[in-house]
Length: 157
Image (cartoon, rainbow, N blue to C red):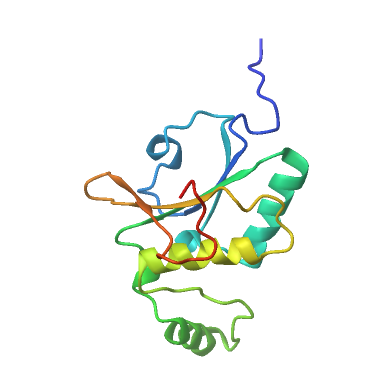
């Protein structure tokens, strides 16, 4: 008999995380199959395509909470936006039409991503957005709080 899970995530949660193979999102967040949508890309950055996926997740599949997960020793911390784009142009003859989205500070990028989500007109639910940094050495998860005075900070934060 097949195991049935509904298409809507049980916890009404969508997770945006880095694609790094050391990051087991389900284990780190104590999730089970069917609990959440998990969307991954290089750096776990909020791109237009990520907003597209989140809009579908919220509007069609009833998610309300968004969790962002970055991690220590991320390759995106080691890239130069302009340098990588130029390297690709020299190697291929084409300049990428997409942004690399490299960053230099994990906490600041999480906060930037939170603000990008809150500013999106396509997302319905923007009040329950949390961000974390996973330490790949200690296996600990640390919450990233909004800056004091952030107008988007909620009572839950």
